[in-house]
Image 1 (cartoon, rainbow, N blue to C red):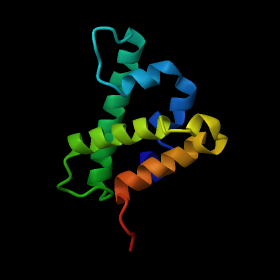
Image 2 (cartoon, rainbow, N blue to C red; image 1 turned 90 degrees about the vertical axis):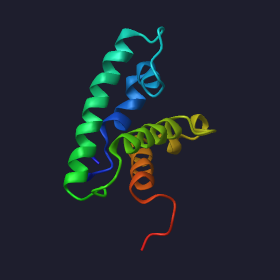
Image 3 (cartoon, rainbow, N blue to C red; image 1 turned 60 degrees about the vertical axis):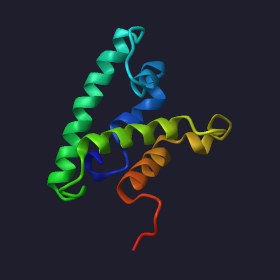
Image 4 (cartoon, rainbow, N blue to C red; image 1 turned 30 degrees about the horizontal axis):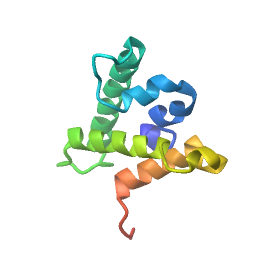
Length: 114
């Protein structure tokens, strides 16, 4: 959604960011590393701004619940990163392909398009 391209910063950087990113997709606990908490805060602010901008520009419905949309977005990211068998298929690990999958699902769902 950032720049309305499938190159979403959190997903495009997720493969290179390593383990701290994986922590950010889960709820923080007392054992969450400080680096992951800092990364989460930065991503969370950016995502909230991005969703607000997308709503303002008509990409998201004017009555969309942005908090829920953010949670769904993070859940989709988590699923994209942890797809069963993805570690055996290099094509399934392509950040651009995963970003497109996440954004298409977030914006259009799984229903027919048309």
